[in-house]
Image (cartoon, rainbow, N blue to C red):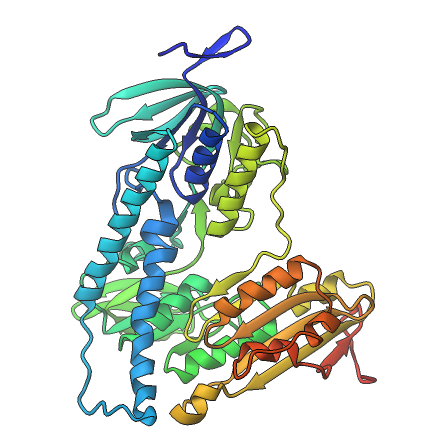
Length: 487
């Protein structure tokens, strides 16, 4: 062990040692190095499908999450585009075939390329990269177990946990027959029939992907509507769109058993239904990656889900140990992990204590068509309200659909504080929703009022202009959630 770093009478190998080279870990290491810190990162060997002993620089988002998923979303969207093209004069006379293996190889090529880019980002910033599994063995010590079993011990003034999360499996008989989102992004063959358990963003996104590629898709979930936690009105819109595109929804239904049969996997529900499918996807949430970090032995506190408990600056109860990203189970989004990594570097090495700001974080669900939101849902606004809440909605047939003939409406929504006129939340389900919502998020971050939305000139003809032309209140709701008729 080297004695290069000195803190009082204590010497350290590194100013910062990061465990986990996903979005948050890489950002924190790079920015800390830019501030002059001697930084190191350890990450498991690369593989598209993660486990306790394989992972890869780039983490979930780059290798087995946002990036490969969005590639498949793009691929699946062409089926409806080709259908719609006929009414725009394109003579598509023959059946159009889809080559799953070709798209899969393109996806794999891209994540390998990005894995290399992330490695170069670390190298260019002067961050030392170790390949292996990291464990915390003391408040200032990290052990890296390499592929051949060799154990290396390093000391660090600060340790950052950025190990993310992994898909979890419900404990039902035959659960080993199902796959998670990791495997779903790397299937050798396109399934003919898929059963999905769960109705969060992963479930509805993969349902849209597989249906767009020609698979039969059945989704089973416990609630009345998919996407629990989102605005109820927009959840209903997504449900209608999924069904209109031919996806079979099974609300208030759970799976009780999976059995291997000759022609696939037999799925049994708590209502006694039986379906045989090629693939069963568990999309039932994710668990923080903390089991193998030795945190309990060091004294780092975890919550009941296994997430690392941190303060407003991402510091654990051990002053030298910090954590960012999904492993903390705050807002589990890649851009949020990047924000937390940036704030960590500013706080610890930049001389500028900075708290992550979780207000008005936009997000998107890449079903087809996509849903995107920012700010409060109607339900959240009512719950927090001291006075009346004004709700503005617009439902319309996108201009493109008037020629294509597709019966699928775009729905937009603004939630406004009746007293201050401040826009508290915005939602859209329709084509290009995420691209539109990014700009709306800036407006909400600046504290925009409904009057300012109304005074903004629209871009015509576009769907986005509807956000600045919704001038009639759809409903007024008091702080108790009771609708008012005197609009």
